[in-house]
Length: 137
Image (spheres, rainbow, N blue to C red):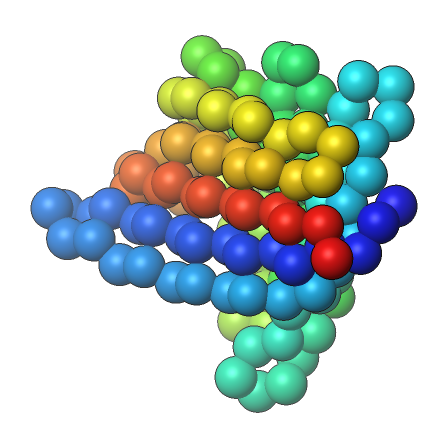
């Protein structure tokens, strides 16, 4: 695993409105057995830490988070996956329907873009796009 600067931009589209959240941090990046791995920590405004581990394979991307927020989200094109999303405010079930995965990650980094829709407790909550840029330090 190599040290990397990781930029995560999250776009959420709900009822025609767009919101954007951006995080820039230092983490780790590596490749093994035709899979890429991205690892980073983030802190919320209250100082609560969440560790994020992303595994990118040919068919799917798995984002596992632990700490203040806990979940294991699977994004796979054309498929729906359910996950339990645990937060300090409470737990709920999310259904993640993968629309597209664009992966240009290579040895020194690159970009990963995930597009998916979310349902919470069987109710649509919006469409999301996450752009993760990795640059080796």
